[in-house]
Length: 450
View (cartoon, rainbow, N blue to C red):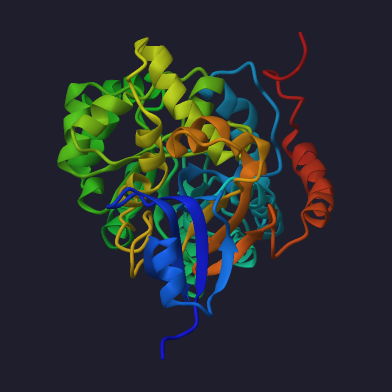
């Protein structure tokens, strides 16, 4: 007698595998894993006692992989819109970096994580940017992710150019790694805020840690970064990272906007994953990542929502749509990127870029049961002519009915299951005010009115 499971039914099951789409299909979940996938009639006949979710109008996709973000920005959204990246870092990130603590990390992650889950994200690859404090800060991120039942590939975005001791940075890495080892859903990577933000000593330590754990780094986000590193070393940041051995371990590189042909070839040769962040790249006027060129070389390009202070939304569905539109308007070509391309980037390519594709990123038997159910009863999805275009161009968080992570619902009826959003919002307000006061946000010379 077979073990009782759960059938999640959809009029369209988009697998990010083969076959890529199943009409009037279903996914069977047993425990944390996908046990079967196929036509609804066949699975219902085989498993008549299974509980059923979804219906014949639903669209089912793999859970979305957010390949880059910053939970450290969860408490200061909607500020400094007039700045390019370098100005924004000076006005917002550097002043707030010394004033984070574990409570702020925990609550800021809850705030951003709620938004992520509501938009179908089941895994967040995060870089928490702060200075080391008297007590470890980043374990608060893991605590929040566990409470939300949201997966994480989490890093401490280490930098010592602001004066932090290398020993203190290594202690923060160790505290985060220990927290991840105790977590069911989070795993650790080494974070590098920026090549130019680390001393030679710290970067060497980062490379050694990354050999065992993998790394997450900003690369070629703006021209100033590339110019500064080239002037100092004679190489681009990507060339320098390759030369110093960072790419010998699994690496996810955020942005990769200002890359030339040689840089692109290096990324392909070393199988470096790229996190494309279309919304923040537009807000901060950073430029356009050459996504089609990278993908043509075999580089796995995922999609990121980036941080709550640089996006400023944590809406993955918006980021997926913008990924398509930005390429089309940049190249002035309607075929530059398709809805199918974008959904692949948000699922299996994102998983490949993080080297987790053996477990996540597609709906296949034996993989983790991470999936999104879009509500086909919504007026927005009432008439589905092409399910890929319906998800990428039409849907929004209101259409996300259920989000499953490891075989359990983290979103049901369009709302997160494990926390009270109103309570989290109320809890965040005094923390956000304190952080703004201590960092003098709004009083910085770049933010002060003329």
